[in-house]
Amino acid sequence: METKKPVILSGITPSNKLMIGHYIGAIRNWVALQNEYECFFMVADLHAITVRQNPAELRRHTLDIAAGYIACGIDPEKCVLFIQSHVPEHTQLTWALTCFTGMGEASKMTQYKDKSQKNSESNNVGIFAYPILMAADILVYQADLVPVGDDQKQHLELTRNLAERFNFHYSPTFTVPEPFIPPTGARIMSLQDPMKKMSKSDENEKATLFLDDSDDAIRSKIKRAVTDSGTDIRFDEKNRPGLSNLMTLYHTATGRTFAEIEKEFIGLGYGEFKEAVGEAMVGLMRPIRERFIELRSDPTMLHDLLAKGAFISHITPCTNILC
Ligand code: ATP
Ligand code: LTN
Image (cartoon, rainbow, N blue to C red; front, side, top):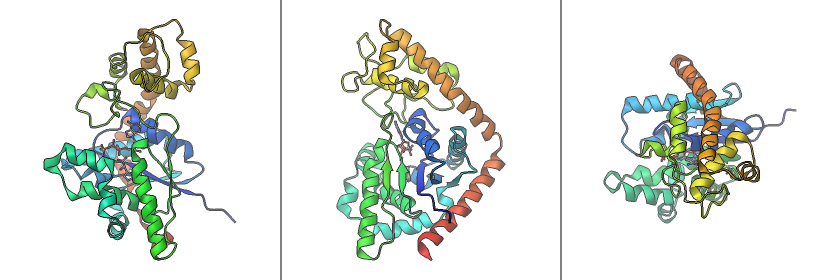
């Protein structure tokens, strides 16, 4: 008898284009795990509408992200790719879980506190309920593993608590999922302020390496990246966060360890190091960009693939939980 593979669910919010933090913190780990797991990767468009969206732009970013997943190495023959809003079970389960979430525990979410403080005028209940929708995304598929960057750790903890609470009050219903947070690259920092996480929504374009940046833009952003005033190349996240962030990028692109990188640049300065990082990133990102452009030129193919994914996703909770 064929044994059932464990399940992965993850997703990215289409509030802008994909950037290198998504690749390193999330997608490259999805790619590495796609053979051993039954994988569901969604574009989390319902999460994006917690802030006002231009509909045409949201549609464009949604397809961009789906094409980006494939360009980064997700195989649509092996994984189910879909758009969150196309599968109504996510919002149905959200309501049940909302009734299981304490006001106190939802108010404690740091991302909610940050976002509601930043945009106090456009604050809405969706920003508050966002982690409950995320819990429903995961629990509705009985996901065993959720590969995310380190900023999502607290949301995963809430998901686990909700699953355990539900199971305790009723009957064992939900799989309690484990987070998968990579040992390196779980938090890629801004190129302009290494104390801040790199974000797709940063007002300063130079702070973020977008996956569709040209070779010259990549080189220029790395060259202008803010570093400290040291001279030698040494990994020290606490005291030299800017340099250490660039070393993490270089490590991802070349596979070299931090010790090997330090050795490679003995006697050389930041100028030579940044040049090497720029070239390594061009080498990593150019094939992704080229594949992305190719995929994006065929929106019908993407729509068909996502419709098929939504259908499979829609019947999965029925067989797992609801029936
Ligand atoms: P938003 O601000 O629009 O809510 P976000 O950037 O916080 O978005 P997503 O874009 O949905 O969140 O993030 C998708 C995935 O990428 C998550 O797993 C997240 O942890 C990861 N991720 C986002 N930014 C980084 C980063 N700078 N470094 C590593 N991983 C990241
Ligand atoms: N909130 C996540 C995106 C997201 C997600 C999910 C990630 C929405 N639903 C389910 C993993 C599992 C974020 O990174 N901002």
